[in-house]
Length: 244
Image (cartoon, rainbow, N blue to C red; front, side):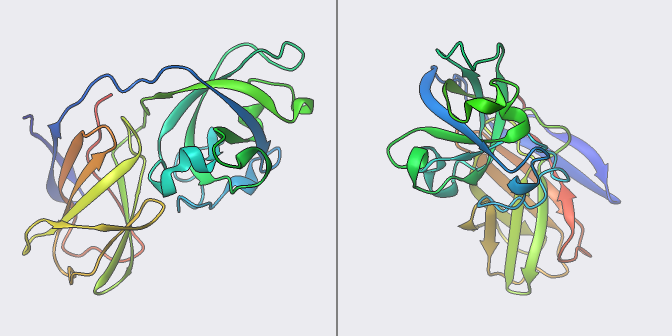
């Protein structure tokens, strides 16, 4: 176990990676891709993962809405995928892209179960195929997410209803469990409300807050005292990060 100390918002905050796992890269799998959101990707903002403004959250235009078979009822939010256009020389462009799952592509057409489908932002789609293609065959695989800075915790809600949006998660990217601890409480599990919004019904006002985040690959990071005792709703606090 490694412990690192950082000074954030006037507090000594420790970020402790508590477990590791390896071999999380997947094999190439066949799928299809389309695009949405307009040339500036403005139509991709918001979405079923709860990330809101994808520019300010750091995801930019390298994003995708996933079909039911891939979305996993929202647990895949934040996961990263590498895609390349395949077997369509008329429309394919060379190279590959890495996108983050930020939205859900509802059933209908290409997103019907059990199809594996990516509805990409238009700008990133045009990195691997010509605009006029519309829909393209692709191959994809899971890859690790590379993020700048720490995991971000945005605290919304009100007393006895703490709704924490977890963003900017590196490594596997998709969070599967979150625990919260006040400076006067024990560790408590949070329940996933929707997307990557995690809920606690405990009264935590006036306490510094720590978080234990576990991703889908079983790796965990503890961020101690991320939010100071004078934290307020609507604010975002930065914690530790997964090593790649």
